[in-house]
Image 1 (tube, rainbow, N blue to C red):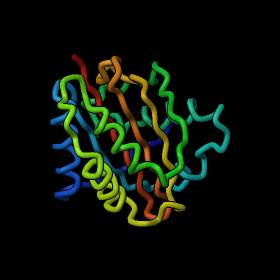
Image 2: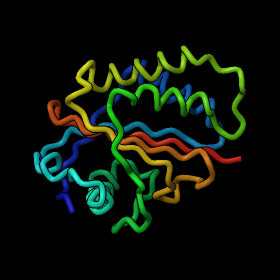
Image 3: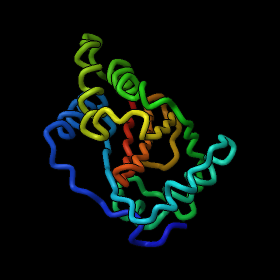
Image 4: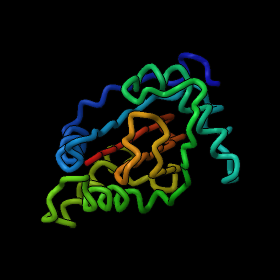
Length: 180
């Protein structure tokens, strides 16, 4: 487990972050959207990130149940130890904006079907630019569609993204969920 003080929460007072949250909350109207950024004070967080997929689950359970993450994203109700599987898998950072766009286009349980794909893609690109500019080769991205805490509704609209930015010493946690 990571000691308290390993992850320091950063305030996200950006219109881009607010637009991202508002847009997803509109589409996922019975659920919610969480976007949180931490300054990482212990370089071991990045050094211990496994290269082998079969070791991801143990690492992410340890990471997500750390006191700083549990306490600063209290709405996720993360158990210690984390009981559920996270299902997090690595994806190429080049497609993260598209992942966000797909989640937006797919929409939540009661979202409208008349969404603009190019606007969804632009929003995905804007949030990626905000998080790590054009440094795609410097970040590692993991995603899951599993309900790893009881905050998620465990239906069809659960998404988690975790972005590691070692160059800037940041960790991003983004979660969305919805239900009908």
